[in-house]
Image 1 (cartoon, helix red, strand yellow):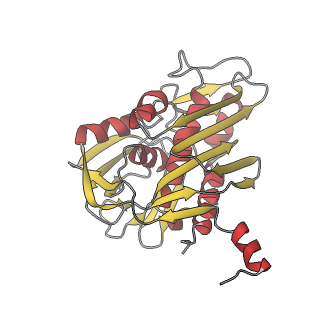
Image 2 (image 1 turned 90 degrees about the vertical axis):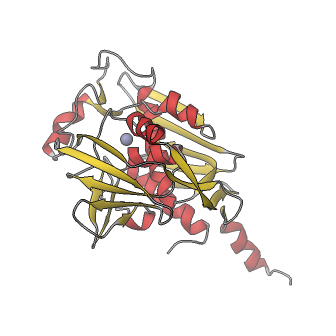
Image 3 (image 1 turned 60 degrees about the horizontal axis):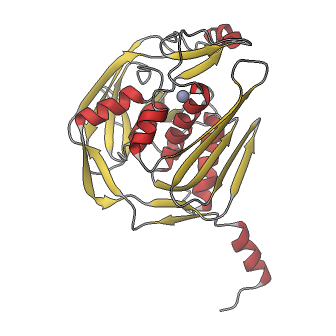
Amino acid sequence: MSLTAEDRAKSELKGAVRLHREGGPPRRTLREELRLEGTGIHSGAECSVRLFPRETGGIGFRHAGRDAEVPARLESARADLSERRTVIESVAGGRFEQVEHLLAALAAAGVSDLLVEQEGPEVPFLGGGAREFLEGIRDAGTADLEETLPVLEVVRPLTLSEGHALIAAMPHKGLRLSAFVEFPGTVVGSAGYSADLEDENVFFEEISKARTFAAAADIEKLRAAGLIRGGNLENAVVFDHERYHNESLHYPDEVVRHKIIDLLGDLSLLGTALRGHFWAWRGGHRSHVLFARRLQEESGTAS
Ligand SMILES: [Zn+2]
C-alpha cells in the first residue's frame, strides 16, 4: 500500500510518542500496608494516608469512609485547579489535593498499583519533598506483580508552551528529567538540573529531599488565597532578592531539584513507564498536566 502525500504529512505530525504494551517493567505494589501522617501544607490540618497493597487497578485515592475512588490518572486531573499543587477529582470520589510528591515517590520506586486512603483535606506534606514517602515505601517493601507496565516512549521531539512555561520531550534511551527555573532578581536566579532516573537511588539521594519553595514576597498572597497554612521553614524553602530564609538547604540548588519531583509526580498520571528526556522550563503543575495530556494524545490512547 502506498501512502499519499497527505497521509505522509499526517504521520509526520502525529506519533511523537509510541506506547509499548509489552516489554515494560513489572507492575509493582507494596509488600505491607503503610500509614503516614502529618500536617497538610495548604490547610494546616492534620492529615494521614494509608497505602494498601493491591494487585490490579493502578493507583487510586479514596477518602476514608467513602467507597468510590479517584484514579491517579490524567482523566481525573483538574488542570484548571492545579496551580500550586496537583488536584485530582471525580464526582463520586471527591477531590484530592497535593498528590504529586506521593505520586513522585511511588513512580521513583516503580510502584504502579495500590489504594491510598486519605483522612483529612489533603495528602500530608511531611518534609516538603518526597523523601519520607520513599522511606515509608522502602520500609514497607515492594512486590513485583505478574503483569507488566506499558511503556510510553518518545520517538520524536514534542513541545508545549503554556503561559510562561515551555515543556518538551525528546527521545532518550532511558528516563531523563530536566528542569529549569528563573526567578530573576532573587538569590535563586536561573538554575537548571537534569537527572537520569533509571536508578531509584539517584532520585532518593539527589532529589527526594528537595522541598517545596516560595518567594517571600508571595507568602502573604498565598496565605490570603487559603494556601500554605501548614508551611514553615522546615518543610519549605523561602527566598528573597538576596538570601534564603532557611538556616540551611538540603541541596545547594534545592529549588530546581524540587521541580524534578513535581514533574515526575505529574507525568506519573500517565500510568505508564516512561522512556525519553522530559524537560520543563519554568514549568508548573498545570503545564505538566497539559503536557502529559499531549503525550497521551500522541500515543493514541487519549480517552
Ligand atoms: Zn512540589
